[in-house]
Length: 399
Image (cartoon, rainbow, N blue to C red; front, side, top):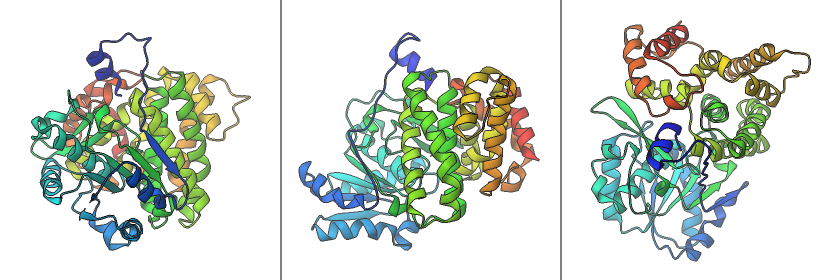
């Protein structure tokens, strides 16, 4: 849960913590084959598959539909999900689901299909939110989503285990972060074989997205012992497995390591929130349709440097989780080692280093800063930020 809305909506004290996870998850190569057993056990009848056309084109969806066909489970496919799904995209999905005769959904893809399925499922069972935009922030939905089985094909977003989703409001050019315990998938299938066809650039970007989740979740204002445990383990696993996953996409050990690591990171940040990296990344997606993982990956080292004074001791732990020997370093040196390790990893796997490299316009930076300041993730940042601070960070990352 995001820190600012969590404390306000639920009227809790700073000493009260809450954790929400999904019901069941399966991990390992080939675990998609468990779907028929779970469908039968849950008395589901017809699936509505939410995905994108590229995953259909490259045969990834077929790896799942072959399992359904073998078990004679009927389904219809909604392959229209966009890279950054929009309000219009969600409304089309709601209409298609209603016409399909399905009673559950299967989301196949990265964060976009799963986020879209969450929105479709919430609106279907809570039609008073059919405008979609009223779901922004913490929506007071009364009913659980249509059941969703989530099969991630990227190792980054952890949407299959989180209580949030992101939809672009194209009319107001903004990304809406929607936070709702009723949206969490009932079942997650973490099958690394579905990730083996990811190109290097996507593997790198989504992997750095997972690292951003872990680092921001570890240092956010809402962090506590349980979330810290998840995030530190995720950082350690990402540092170990991401370079190998990028270098050799068929390395199922590395793929499985990343698949598990991004899920672990999601277990933490979903419940404690994020920070300014995500607050700044969301406007880049809304303004320029930049992939979320790329935006996070590029911004992460710059925001880490800004946040260093507010999380010095935790930065030492980040450095150690990433393999740095900090035994002979003072606190400031160890903190800088954490930032340097993230920069080195980013460079090693080919992440763009400057915003002007990915089409951002300098004249938009102030408007981006204003949008980032209003983002639901930003208040969780460990060091408070102003619009001027965010503008300066965008400028530093620009060229």
